Image (tube, rainbow, N blue to C red; front, top):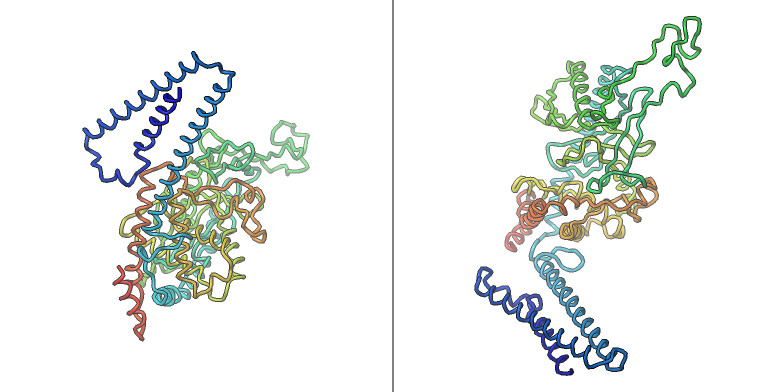
Length: 540
């Protein structure tokens, strides 16, 4: 009996020691295509399994024939069997953890160290060079950004007023005022041509209204793969609710309606196309809205074009309100006037499209934008930061690097919104004193490290939805404050090729960062910057 148990332990030990994951580094040099070697390994593994099964059967028969299950020896056998199983399982778990730790350690050695900072092997940044880059390439554009923003706001006011005049108040959507969002209105836009994002809310004509179905509602039927979206249902309030029957019944010539004059005709029902709904549904369609808005903008510009001495064109026919202004001097200003639907009395808006969004979600599922709350969060946090804080400079530098890298390797799933979300997370987690101008290099490394870990984990949570760190002063609605976090990197989980391209883009961006900053950093008169650039070039 004891001999059989001993042989079982020998077989188990041999299986463990021969497992390829126990010594992963020793097997990395074996040729993967050696079929003969692989065949021998598989044969050896089968022999071990057969031997183990034979011994287990032998022991089981011995126990059944020679021992009473209720005796002390029987219980001892069960005890040692359970103990051996626990030991084997523990060894397997520990080995897997050890392999994961070694893999993470290897990644850290390649580019990152503990704490999420870049290692000097991957990215060498000189503090003087970064400060010079910000001073010359960012500060000089602040005045120009203000002038462009002032022009865009004035022109948008005039264009929308003309748009309201060409719309039929009885049948067309009612257009509201615009709200400036995005990088230009948050003071971190650096790339040219300068681009302004404006959202313009609209509402249905009377007697219709919008009803909203959010993804985070208890009875929501929004698919999991489009979290952060909702549907907009167009419903008719109806005059019958006010007790008036003149539009729905024949009251005869002797009856008068006290709510409507004798010559006032009852309003005809709108068709789904008039209400911009998807075919055979009561839900608002993004494509229908964009077509209506583009036609309306074209008519509105035709009425006021004689007042301006520049050329206005649509940059993208698939995106309503994507306009480009070209002056006679050759200067170009780009703007996105985006039709949106306001969510009740909040500052959250259902957006027909995002300028950087290339997804093909359903026509009736509208993404919800928290751009106004994000702008308010930046303003709130800035009040407690040191003077001349570096938080926006960090975002500007990474945005600059990202755009230049896309010019080299093409577009990927990473967007400026992901970079901004990274900054918001760090602003909420780090102390205010750590964002002084002298900490630019450290915070830049922190942002890159945070973004790298998020890409590795394929998880970047929305900065506001389901985040308990958001201060109450930002006034995010409780529905979203307590909702489950939204993973902005979910598409990377579902699409392997897209994830590989995005990770490759990020790694190339890090590799090219010193060269790009060197190329676009002007030289200082005292030569300090030139010295810093040379040191970076040598480190490469």
